[in-house]
Image (cartoon, rainbow, N blue to C red; front, top):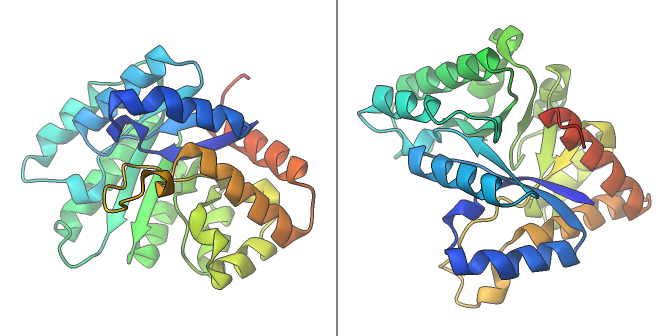
Length: 252
């Protein structure tokens, strides 16, 4: 069964979840990680993990969610920790023009890396227009990183190799279906270094509900990867799920 290592399913309406779970089960998706972006989002992810055996929780303060009360945000987030939490996610750096102050972003990123180390949890990190700073920061603090994955990877082959050299995974999502540069990178990387995701969230900007990305679509990513590497889809499913289980230190 497939493992979708990064979603925001806690942001969907409650009545969406049952049919969405049925759709991902029909597509051989057996494990889904619900990542947090702020305190409320993280709390909702924990509640989902408590209710459903195929959903796991991540807690995190996304860089674009940081506000002037970031110390309180971090404190409230850290107080959520319990046995349902298997990763600190989603964290990282975002250098879009309207994103929060970069020094504060780095402080929050480092604080969450330290927290992950204290609790022996891996990290799932975001890097947008910030690849160089993100990878450098990870390298300087690699002794504090239990394990991790670069979420929704859209960097260069050099970026991917540096992440792998730090002992972390490269996570591919639906951009792999259409981005030729990503496809070339995926061809060059061993499947032992790859995990898969959808980054599912409510896509209200799409008028047709059936076109929203959901965890079921991780099968499309797996099929594309199998095609690029010219290996059976079963091998992709088996290895990427093994990688995910290893990343999150799960027993199943």
